[in-house]
Amino acid sequence: MFRCALGATSYTFATLRELLAKATPTRSGDRLAGLAAATAEEAVAARLALADLPLQHFLSETLIPYEADEVTRLIVDSHDAEAFAPVASLTVGAFREWLLQETTTGAMILNVSPGLTPEMVAAVSKLMRNQDLIAVSRKIEVVRHFRNTIGLSGRMSVRLQPNHPADEPRAIAAAILDGLVMGCGDACIGINPASDDPAVIADLWRLLDQVISRLNIPTQSCILSHVTTTIGLIEQGLPVDLVFQSVAGTQAANTGFGINLALLREAQEAGLTLKRGTLGQDVMYFETGQGSALSADAHHGVDQQTCEVRAYAVARAFKPLLVNSVVGFIGPEYLYDGKEIIRAGLEDCFCGKLMGLPMGVDVCYTNHAEADQDDMDVLLTVLAAAGCAYVMGVPGADDVMLNYQSTSFHDAIYLRDVLGLKRAPEFEAWMAAQGLLDPQGRIASGGDLMGRLLPFLS
Image (tube, rainbow, N blue to C red):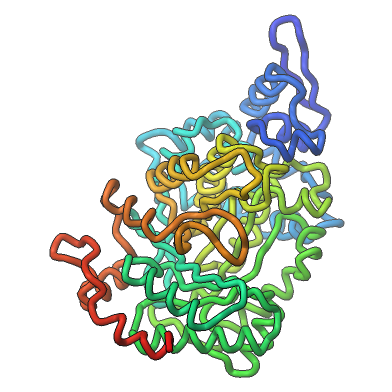
């Protein structure tokens, strides 16, 4: 039991689960689930109590029972006590101060990262202002490799997302060309297929492989189908680069996705057999999103942001090339407006990087949310300041297959102009060789890509 007095009022929190939920900055999902603090005063009391809680306590009280949840077992069994030692004596509040100290470097943070449980990471994020989240995130450089290098400081990559509601190859190829000539696609070229037919998905894999190999692009492809479909296509010899799966922070939520940890391990091993990477073999790509466990009634009374960080523990176990939170995609029932989406996006970037992940964010919202593209401009800019590894590039920022609003190819150009950010180094060199950059590194004409892609458009 945890207590905090504010003036003449004493607040009591029966469990760590309740304390974390009531310390969370307000969001609609927790309010609708009955988990949020009833008043601003109760939220302040929860944060004060949380600040005084030793980090060690998180090793003795689990939010979801060890026996009932394989994600809890993963968190407990993989805890690195040696890495944890430098911060083991700290409270959550003191840990926040340590992270913010100018003398605490990104390398120091990454050294302790394997010793941090997702609950510790979620807890410290709840004590932070937005600028604190940005300041710490910016320090941390998590680098991964497949055909290029993801996560270097001073660079932000883009997933080129050429979705189409009928999986039409020519339309997809046109969107790919549009993105490439505007400098997008270094995180990956990744399609959310409209169909779940393995034959259709196989054709999309072949299309992406032909584009990348014909143009000799130093990037990787991904079709965001269910992991079981991808395993089957690997067994058939399809040219699979990255193996994708949506993941969540509880066993029950992952069961709803049709997955478990053993299946993810099987998928990773299948991807590794192909040895398609040239610089590295980080073959996994995961997507997450605050509210996924709650929407499946699989949250066990845990607040949605803490559930989200538990999903990062799942991702961390597989050393992925890419992880991103699709932050506003689930809808206003979980993140109501632009303010809540912005806060959640910064939390996800911070928590993912603190967990040692190459964290990206899909800066997005649904059309029935109380948000607009101005809100997304703010989130995009602050994420870039925080050192987010990558964002999405969608034609016109309007995904015509998934029916949500994201960020465009032009948004990436804006970030590079305003903040001086570069692309993955190998991709940047390729663009220069194609005549896509002027001497100052800005977007030039389309070079000869149009002619070389015409066979895909005919």
